[in-house]
Image (cartoon, rainbow, N blue to C red; front, side, top):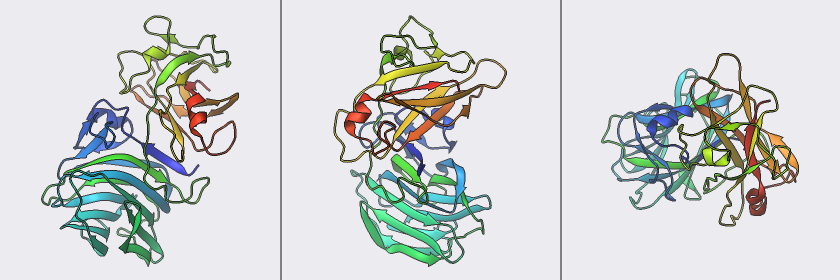
Length: 346
């Protein structure tokens, strides 16, 4: 797998919900503030940020996301690359410039470029980063173009001397003139694994929700394994655009218990589909080990996501599928529109 994280922020109801995925420190959240009307995180000032711990530490990575800067006078960090030793390097917006730094804001600037964002426009920012004492990389792309002056290779990117990036911080850590920006549609990618090994370019994460029940034995008229808390229809208990604990489907802790749903269609034909992320939100209600994994059914071919322990508080159960399981090739719009998604007890 090359895409290790992706998030369009559409499934969260409020800022507290982001705690299922990130370590959150201040900031705000809107279910309609995103660049296409969905969810978005708001960096509203000093010490407003969230941190994503990587599934496994990386030496090299790509990341990208959409940002709307409310003011060209913002001062703060945008991305911070953390190792176990601390803040190694960061991309900052300060004094009307994008600045790549070793360490935190304005510690050992590596390069800069003038940047005057429009408060009415979303800008797509991507960074290719490698943590190294002499062969480091800090390459920035802005709105589809590599940034002259921030196309840095063969440099020292170790601000604290760590060996791998363990987490990425998004938001402001600088007590300057106040940071005011929105973040949406972001990804993290490991360039040393296939199928996606390089910059994705401007991308949108489109959220689909269940529209029908599908039997896990692939019989469209058969039953799912779980028990809906109201009535006999399963998908209507889990099809909110923003998740809610008010309704749910209960699965017994028995191997083979499975829920599978038909999904809504894209309503468009993208030029390319990089990946599909299947997400369930689950908690356990009793003691003992309980695991879940996401399920993807394309045609008659089923693929499973990683096995994830379920906790006593709600958390995400995720699986990222970069190719269509039925073809082992890139997804098409018709393939996504016909897929079935769900989760099961392994």
